[in-house]
Image: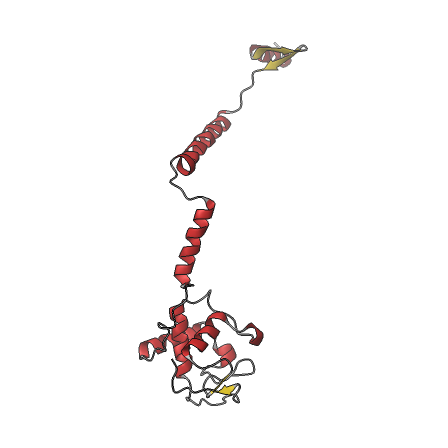
Length: 195
């Protein structure tokens, strides 16, 4: 038997009863792996629908967004510290941590290694301040930045507690008189009370 006749005979065994204008349909099922994938997809969609819609266990997109936003706000403490909680730290541990954050965030690029200022940023060690010298003033400048002066906001990079420690460290630099300090800028500020 020739190969062509053999193929015709095999096909005749798989021809269905459907007939349309003399055209007959060949029963040619899809491979098993495709059918398995199809059934798994159907099963998964039933589980998904049950979890999110019928049993209402899962969070919908808007609920998930609100949850993730709350987590982000908690992580970065976006809900600001109250004015009562915002005091300058004076203990050595907090000031050392503030100095470490000052270094890690590369504040020295604009304000110098010891806060002496440079061509970009102002001197942080004298009694002249551009945006105020209270802890809340310094805290707000670090947190929200001063885009018109080139100061980057750090609220998305540091928690409020860390910003408070950096602000405390910056205030502690007043009167340290480092070498090569930049000329005073801004107005004289009473640094005797930093609260």
